[in-house]
Length: 135
Image 1 (cartoon, one colour):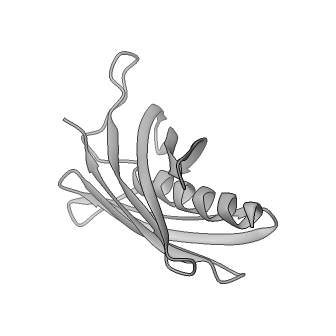
Image 2: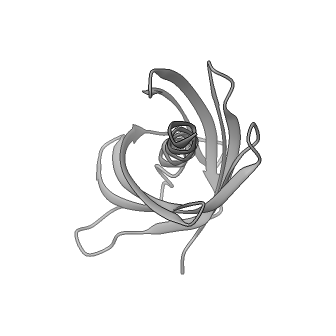
Image 3: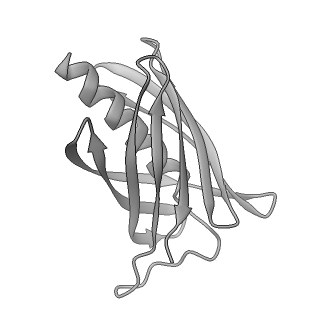
């Protein structure tokens, strides 16, 4: 059960990483690290929890971020690298990764300071996340 718990949290975090990648206006300077806060949900298991994405650096279309949150009261922290493209006045994201031997795909977007995305895996894990830019 512990492997499944970590897998679903990591999947949600990776998805959030991809989706929070890039507002056109989100430039990351050394002293300015914008963050987004919200919730992730795994529909297969009916679990959810808090999630925060903090941008660490940007190099062209490549982004690095750190995701922190809680799963059943236990904290987690994961780094993420991803790319994003401008679309319809916001940013569109999609990507894939392998977590615990399971292939995950995600997609979503960032617009007006809000991130929304979905994720799914070949083993049937799926869910969504919603984040809002911190003031």
